[in-house]
Image (cartoon, rainbow, N blue to C red):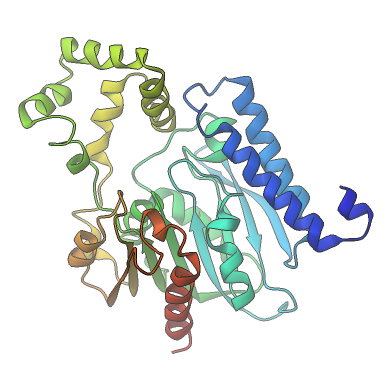
Length: 335
């Protein structure tokens, strides 16, 4: 506020963006209880800070709400400056598992805008305001979420319908390919890292096969034991935040939802050119598995720890990731 009053608009914009991230961090480990007043305040301040930054950003921004099954998806359309009247390629960037539409600015939007791309950011079910304010849990069929977003996007000015790209980072590395298998209006797909299914992270890492079958069967004794694990503050938050995201009332219910989150049988239906990226040592990576399932034009780019780009979503190597992704997109959309 002081910077804005003094006329330092760039400083003011960046300060509001820092505040946006500070508020997001402040609620990251208190998400198991959606009614927690600290969570509600933190989320609202997070969104308020991002919207306070908008007038100081060098991009025109449209704020909207997109209807979905009686609920509302908070959304932003950001456009490159000085390109009004010209249809631009547009990138759709969904949230990850525990992110928000506002956080999407630092996920990839700031990379895309200087390169001439429109960007659409939004909260889907189980994300941001849809979860924290409306209580709408996540759903595995992300195609049902993406389609109305594309419908809305194509009604906006300066959007090139033939150059729509979808970028899924972190958990959206599952959401994006799942939706792209059904949504044929996409011209490009980027997955970082690629993710296919989640049961293989549970079996045999958490349970052996016989125990997993008991979980799936709803064994009451085992369910009670799983609930008892929530007595640990660490597990209460780890499981609890994920349970809240999926709308699960118990640990057992949360685990029984995992098989539904899969694109293993539909990944071969993706038709648009696809780039899969992979940071060495990324705990979430199934990039090679997804890449092998794809039947479309495809490319796999691997980043290494030696490059400084190891870890989840390439860690501290964001500039390297940006170069690989946007050079690929630039080439693809210039054909």
